Image (cartoon, rainbow, N blue to C red; front, side, top):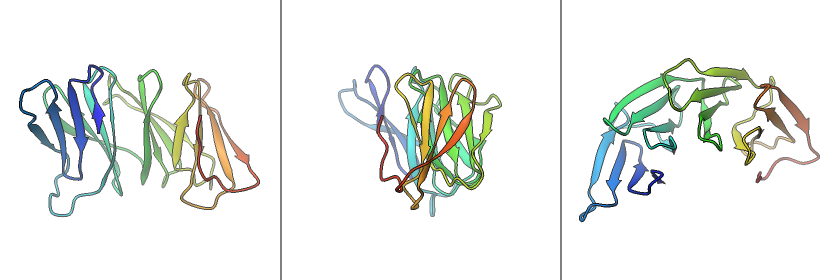
Amino acid sequence: IKFTPDASIAVVVSDEYLALVDLTAQTLTPSLIQVTDDLVDPPAAEEVVLAPDGSYAFVRQFGTTDLVVVDLLDQSVDYIPVGLNPTDLDLSPDGSTATLVAGGDEQLWIFDVAQPFATPEILDLPEGSELGSLVYSPTGDQAILYTTAKNTDRFASWDVASGEIQLRSMVKPVSGISI
């Protein structure tokens, strides 16, 4: 569940639908927006993030190669092709970019939140790094890429301005990251 910046609308994602709930209404009734073509066996919706101005919702689904983009104003749904096996989706701290980790292709896909259908910037992750998660620093000038899905004793630091990604070794596997 995410909330628009003014907290007037709750955005709830399920495998089949995105539900918009107007929290200012006397009776709370969800407005359902279908986010998948397959209602019988839909891909698992694992994550939803909202544009800071409440214009778009971005939905990452398990096992797909598309990012679902929902225009919250006209309730239209579009799909943007992304890399293989998207494993994480995060907004930069300033809300200007949505960054998707395509673990299967070892890439970062960076979208302009205000213009999500513009060509994204794509950065290659270090080969064989098996990174699947991302955490931005509070300033947004750096991020940490890591995985807890495998016993991997490395992480990567990403300098957002230069695009440089450096793989770093550790003594033990990552059990969690917090900034």
